[in-house]
Length: 114
Image 1 (tube, rainbow, N blue to C red):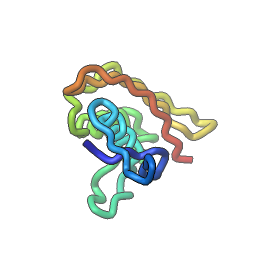
Image 2 (image 1 turned 90 degrees about the horizontal axis):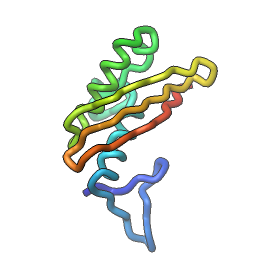
Image 3 (image 1 turned 45 degrees about the vertical axis):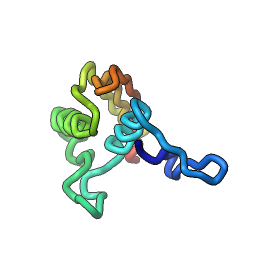
């Protein structure tokens, strides 16, 4: 179990922190992993996705993202992965099917680094 995050804040219900578990917990951790940029973490600066380097080398970016997803606790494999960079809006659209300890989890996430 983990604390539920909604947007960028902890979610509360009647003043109590809400918890999340199962596939919802893994999905939340995936979103955090996809939005952790290389060198942004004070605790572990080598953690995160190197988007700046990856946008020049798409194969590197795909490898880096899959590596981050595989590192999320509860994910067994990353399947049916695709990504598309929108140069106009400076967004990266990621779609993947993840095999987790709870079953299949399909994700679709947009990262805006612009």
